[in-house]
Length: 551
Image (cartoon, rainbow, N blue to C red; front, side):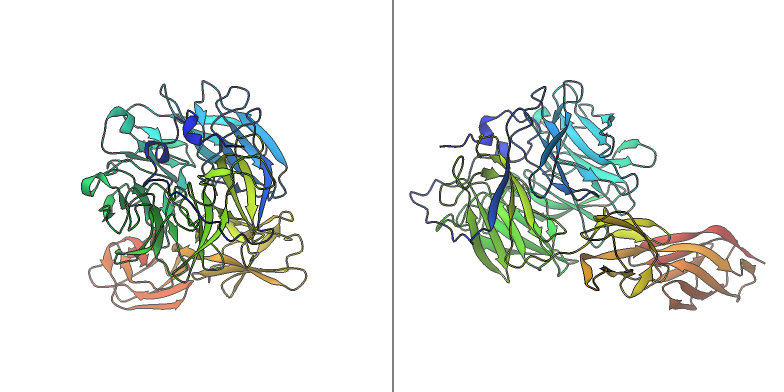
């Protein structure tokens, strides 16, 4: 049985891959991929009654279930919001309609209010929406104008807790895109001032240096696409321009950050074999390297449309839209610079289903990988599947931002958390409150420094996060709060590790000692005026809530 290609289905919210013809000619014969026993399992077959042809991101909720969107099907044939358990139990939560626009692209869970945010596409007005996973309440937060573009995927959370997203203007004949910010606490939408230098392929990535990184599948050298960097103020810098040589062309998927701190991604075309590449950008120098080129032979796959998963085992995993034994796509691993084909999709029907995967693989806290295919399956509407990695590694995760600040409550997601005994930020113990078996709430301790978060289960087993938190600086008090030049002042708060500067009323102090991550001793410098005390660290800056009075 052959599968219906996603390109045969109208998808107005697909801004990247549908415009791209598959690079290179179809090879006459493709050898079978080595399939690990019981590694792949088709958990749910989509049909257009409850939503179909899913793509975009899958997001783990506090209840342990996964959430996503489908761009077609449902009550109005404009797509759905759905929830699915890791065992495949599927629930349709919301039907998009003519007032909301066509759904798709996935959802982002915001740390400030615990709601999901996503986007819809429509030629008459796309939207940015909020969805409450507890009540299923749906709220249109903003309707995009023609100058704001058609949103590309869901927004992502920046280190300031606001949401940042991208818009495409290609349908309006523009060669640039847009970027926007939603201030979650107030609901205020702002179009950021600088244009994106090409047609964006969202969503963005918040990296460990605090910048937001993205890719465009147009613009740059001979319109081959690029990687760019953006600040939360909207300043944009071009990082790398693709040449359609061995480096590849048309990077139309989100980036990932590896354990080494570098950025990794896929280009869907170009490279030595003209089938796409895997690339690396070294931070902070932005040195570029081609890690591998898809050859399309021996079932190795071609046209990587979904980007990479930086997994907790330190390796990368991804999918290709085409290639494999039946030319319906593959799952692969990149470990130690070696490309390892793992699985070949077969299309529709039979024990192994699914075709044309376009969703970035996600790793659940149970250590298993989950994904979506945009076609294939028993109903030819796509599948929700799980893939067992070579070494599954259960872990915990933070919802939904790895940039945290003193006294903030953070949600830790995982498994078997009801009987947790201790929570640590690095080696610093934190106060916490149990939530359920799948989440708990912890307070960021004042002495915390950048590093993994860990929990001690009731069994005595310690489970660690796959990522490190980054502690933002915060000043809570000054001791004393007034005094003449030469006074030694204790600056109390948190996140002070690595402090590079302390100022009094804008004047830098030369005598500064970081006693602990929660305490700085600094001497009021000559020329200091009454004003707020400022601290600058590698993670950011902070000012005291009250002024220091210079007598």
